[in-house]
Image (cartoon, helix red, strand yellow):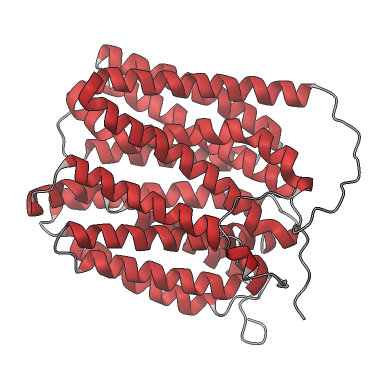
Length: 414
């Protein structure tokens, strides 16, 4: 420590832990939903609403306070978001009905949306000087690994405990409070700038200098996060009703496999330049979609597992590749704003197809909805692969000076 502050390595590790814990907390409730169905007599439609309000809270936070750490600093935003996350898990701990579940998920969404931009920016700024790729890599890997750990551990606990939610949410609440205190010892990596109140206006904005790289990343981001939405929305039901696997935790473990493969793909992508990683990931997503469709056609759990692994690798490769490309094109004063915009696209791609699938199942049936969703993912993946290959095969245009865009510069705070 230096003057009461953590060193660069310890600070980077702390931000990785915070990323993993925030994502784990967001996926922990999913395996508990069947318990809540039995405990309080909820309907599947009600649980869809509980999922939707989490995404709504997250998107509102991204659109309003997502770039706040560019203005007032990473440290206060992270500390506040971790305390809000502790409040969300505390509400889950004391929940006695659907109203409490809705409140808890909204609070969780707000916490995750508030922290996302600051965590991603901090990881880039505190990455080892000789390995700058490690910042966006650990953003992607920490996100997927946290989702895997939260859903996987909770799914296993459901099988061995009558009240797994009581233990998990108590531990998470304590962990968030401890992390909030530790975050105060981080070195501040944002110089801060004026316009903090103006930044709270709901908007998605990407500076001109970053815009071309950001727009180019959108097809791969949408393809990868749509796969994630497929697993979160339909995988437990598909595993049980179409593949006829009736082990209670099988659906949750399938989600965990996807996210673990996602983490591996994120680490693997560090070996390649960002465009190459994105292209490889798009191809893997296409192959994975074909495997998932084949699994449904043959009712084969092993083939489904293989499709989940390949798809997860594709998600990790594309997400890491696109984040690195965006990061390399972004200047420090607008970093959390740009990362927040990327996550707005990501969570929209995660949630909107999932909600549409939930509405389609009663009309078209589970298997048909699964085939249509997978076909959509395959089309998006092929489009992302073609777009990435074409963009980077063509000669790059000569650099040109950008006019200063009103409102995009960050004037340092006095």
